[in-house]
Amino acid sequence: MRIKMLVATVDTQYVKLLSDNISEYHADIIEVSICSTLECLQETLARRKYDVALIDAEMIIKADLKTIHLPLLLWSEHEPAVDIPGEPERIQKYQRISSIVAAVLERYAKVSKIKHSSDSRYANITAVWSPAGGVGKTTVALAYTSSKVSDDKEVFYLNLETFSSVPGYFSENGKSISAAFEMLDSLDGNLMMLIQGICNKENGLTYLCSPDNFDDMCILSAENISELVASCARLADELVIDLSCVCDARTRAIFEIADQILIVTEPSIFAKVKLDQFISQNNVFEHIKEKTSIVANKGATIEKPATDIIISFPLVQSNEAIEVCRILSGIGF
Image (cartoon, rainbow, N blue to C red; front, side, top):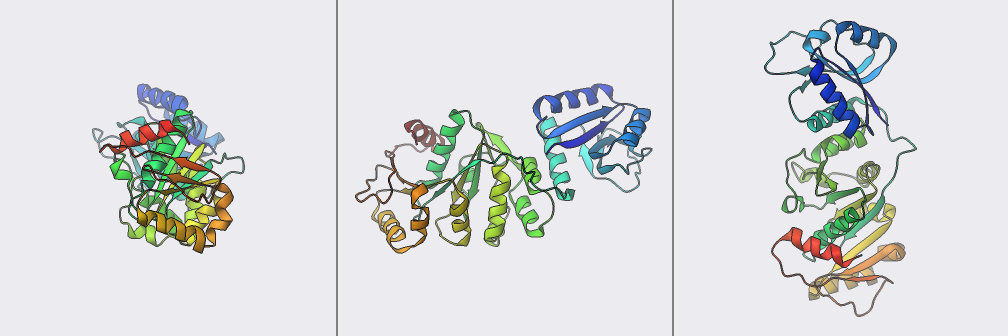
């Protein structure tokens, strides 16, 4: 789905710069039209409806906004304050255009009733899990994402750990995943569009920043998690989900929809015992066995393979997490 967006401002140089940038870099999600005079704006609104409009103060006070689903005020702190009826939400004029696009998507997502279109793409989903902590699960997940980025895939990394490892690998300069949790809780709005607005892109992959409060993660239901995964999967070629070391209803829901599952272990006796328990005593494994690969990390050996595919990674001696991911991604999956 593409948003029909109108940009109306008397600043002709600015409106052309904004329009050209959106057309070049965001044409897959936004169809942009422009007006630089009040007459043009009035004529345009008389013949067409728009999802979103960015309109400067000089025009918005004189325009008929009935054909705009979400009118937004394009403003600058350097311009004089204007009393505008209805007090529309504001979008700051002079900032990075990518930030303007993100803000528009986030705001429109909250008022949009449109859900996923039937022709949306859907990513290949890989779930990375372990019954034991400290085995290098996140490192394996990010090594896998790096390998897919190297294959020129659009990759979305979704961290659903109880306590996120994202800050250890990425800058956290974007909006929290908690915004998506709030929308899931309200059961209203367009979650996929919201995610497009709040996600970060770094080193060739897309990700969401950590929750504001990790209790937010704990209250999500299996249905909430499935909806979140479905929304992220429509934004990439590959979706990699980094899971907590529990096997609750939410984890099982992701196992159900995943195309493949990587179960990570390492040489310690605790990791071996917990993996053996999961394989031999939990009926979940029999349901996922055919799409599961065991990742023997840090030089671990698997004496009695429970799956046909074993991926062996050596112990990499480095204190730099990103460097370890890079090395492991080159070994292959």
